[in-house]
Length: 152
Image 1 (cartoon, rainbow, N blue to C red):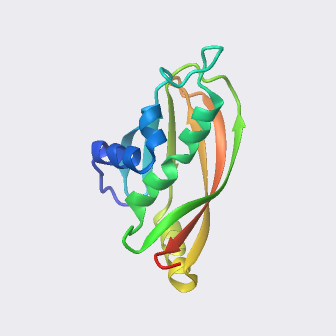
Image 2: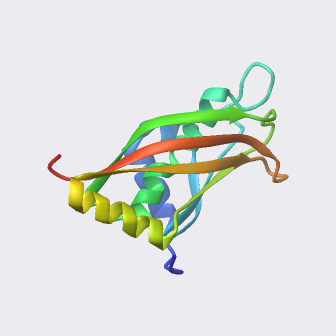
Image 3: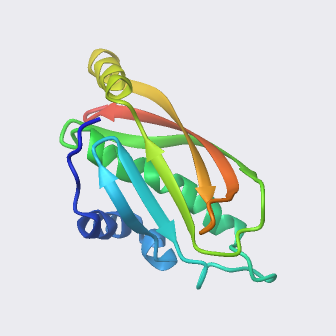
C-alpha cells in the first residue's frame, strides 16, 4: 500500500462517533495509512473481576478496525462495510493496554472493489492479533466482512 498517512485524531473521532461503544471504551487509532491501521484500547475502564481486560472489550477491539481500515482503503461515497461474523480465540490474560493491527494489500483491496462493482457486494476476511504492551498475543480473531455498493 502507499505511504499516505491519515490523521489519527480525526480517525479516532470518526470511529468514536460512528460507534458510541468505541468512545465508551476509549479506543484510539494510533497509526493509520492506506491499507493499514493500529488501534489501542486502555486496560483502565475495560477491566473485569480479576484485573484483566474484559473479554467483551477484547471482542469489540478486534471488530473496531474493520471500519477504520475500510475508511483508509475504500471510497465511502461508493461503498460501505458490514460485519458478517467474528471468531476470536483468547490466548493469554490481557493485563495491559491492548493493540490490534489490521491491514490489507493493494491487490486485495482492488479485488474486493472490483467484485463489489460487478456484483454489488464482496466478502473478505481480516485476521488480526491483539497484543499486550510487551508484544504478547492475547487473542487472535478472524473477521468476516462484506463490502456493499450504496443502493444495495
